[in-house]
Each structure stands twice: as C-alpha cells, then as structure tokens.
Image 1 (cartoon, rainbow, N blue to C red):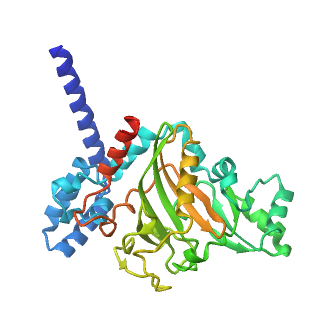
Image 2 (image 1 turned 120 degrees about the horizontal axis):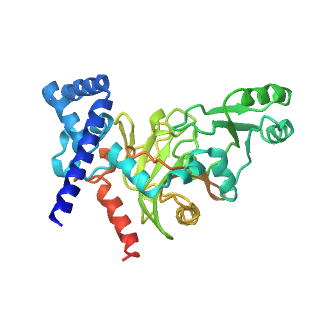
Amino acid sequence: MLLFTLMKEMLDMLRKARFMIGRILKMDYKSLFETSKKVSEITGKNRLLVFFDIVYCGLKYKAGYKDYLAFRFYELNASQRDTYITRGRNFEYVTSLNEKDARELLSNKALFLEKFDELSHRKWLFVDKNDFEGFKSFYLSVDEFIAKPIHQLSGVGIEFFKTDENDVVEMFEKFTEDDEYVLEEIIKQHPKMSALNPSSVNTIRVVSLRVGDQVEFPFIGVRMGNGSRLDNFNRGGIIARVNIEKGILQTDGVSQDGTVYKRHPATNTEFKGFEIPFYDEVIEMVKWAAVRLPGIGYVGWDIAISEEGPLVIEANDFPSHDLLQFPELLDDDRIGLRPVFDGLIDKMKRGGK
C-alpha cells in the first residue's frame, strides 16, 4: 500500500514537472518582456521582478501574460489570484466538460445553424459551390447579408454586403473561391437593444454549464459595438455584466483596453439598471438548447433580441474566459469566477442540492 502511494505521488510529481517544463518552453518571451515593461510603467515596480511574477503566475495559476495584464494580477494577493479562471484553467474546463468529437458542431457555423435552425429566426445559407441556384435564391431574397467564414472566431473574416441582382455570378464566385462561408440575413434587433448602440446587433453572452439535464449560468453579459457593426470585445466592443436573477445590467461597461463607460458613447444610454427585453425567454431558450448538445457541458452562447423575441446567433465550445473577469465586472473584493464555476458544477453533480 505504501509503495503504491509513493508511486502515485512520484507520477503526479512527474506530470506536474512535465507541465511546467512544457509551459517554460512554449512561453512567448518577447511578449512577456513587453508585458513586463508595460506593468512596470503602470506600477513603478522593477521590470525584472514583474517578469518573474508573470512567469510564476503562469506556473502556479496557469495564467497567460494577457491574463496577468487584463486581470491586473499585479494588484492581487495569492488568494485572489487563485480564484480566477485563467487561460490554462479555462482549457481544463473545456477538455473536461466538452468531448472532443462533439465540439465540431459548435466550431462549424453551418452545422450549428442546421442543428438549431428553429432558434435562428432568420434566413441563412451555407454556400455550396455545386449549388448556384440555391445561392441565387438566397441572394435575391434579401437586401443585405453578413458573410462569415464557417471556422473563424472573434469576428475574423466577417463582412457585410448589399445585394445587387447584376452581381449574382460574381458574388457566387467570391464565396466559392477559397474559404467556406455561411451567409445570414441581417437581423433587425429590438428597439431597446438598439438604444444601447444602433450600429451593431448587440448580443447577450450567456455562459452555460451543464451536467446531465441540469443547466446553470455562471455569467451573463451584454456585448455592444462601439463605432463598429460588430459587437466583438476584441474589436473595440464594450461588455457589461448582467444580474442573472433580475435580467438587468449591474455594472458599467468596459472595453478590452480597460476603458470604463457609465454610458454608451454613441447613445448616452446608461448601462447600470438597463433591462434586457425578453430576458426570461433568453434563459429558457438557452436551457432548452444546452440539453440538446450531447457531450457538451460548457458553452458561450450569443443571443440577439428581435422585436419578436430572442434568437441564437452562435455558440462557442471554447468560451472566452477573459471578458468574464475584467476587474470592472467583478465585485469590489476582486474575486474571480472560478469558485462560481466549481460551485455550480459541484451542485449539479450532487443533483442540484
């Protein structure tokens, strides 16, 4: 028994050592030095000490240098740091809750829309190079559409097009030349959501966790464009956190560079207290959809709100961990979302008790 225990401990030590060595070898040292310099300028701390603290956080908390900067780890103590879902820990949630073979459904926009067509509430088309007539039918049925490469993330490659019946052949050739695309009819969002920012379709980011038929929500936020037709956070967008029980915004907005907004700069709409239309329907829709994804337990859903109710834009099998935990979206104690995630997962494993 003692021998077995010792062997188990040695294997665990070897596994941890291998992980640490792998982390050290894969580190982007140029970016590490640049981040160290930036933090040193912000805090006045010695650059070398900052560098080693970033490396330490990578090994101890599996935090990337972007995590260190975004979460302002340089302001936190060890207990606070340990509560954050870092890049490495987010990967662990994904791999433990989402089966590899099942993830293709969410990473492929066409497969996802086919699966949840009844929740899309808009015209859409996967462009098939062997189906010109299908493309022509869709193209001539809409005035404007959005084109999305089916495997790209974070708004990469997305373009908007107005239709012209004289350009059908040219546009078909464009979308069948190299990448694969999904084309979607432009959504007319609810006037109240337009009051936040009219230039973009502003979406509800709903993070869901599922065990069996139980679904819980550790985070919900509203993403808005800011001078763009896209609401993506890494493209200049703004996010504010939602009070999950009440369906209202409970924080100011924040952009990726850390700028805080009490009101949207384009509309002057105040964030705190803003009530999301059809919020109960959003929750029910996501619960319904989440249990229909076998092998998938951790999803970031993007939901738009039209005048008729909510509709699904897409779902992410590797949800962003950073936009959930910007300091401005957390309580004053600066505790991250790891305890919330773990608590909800444990609760569901115990049957909701």
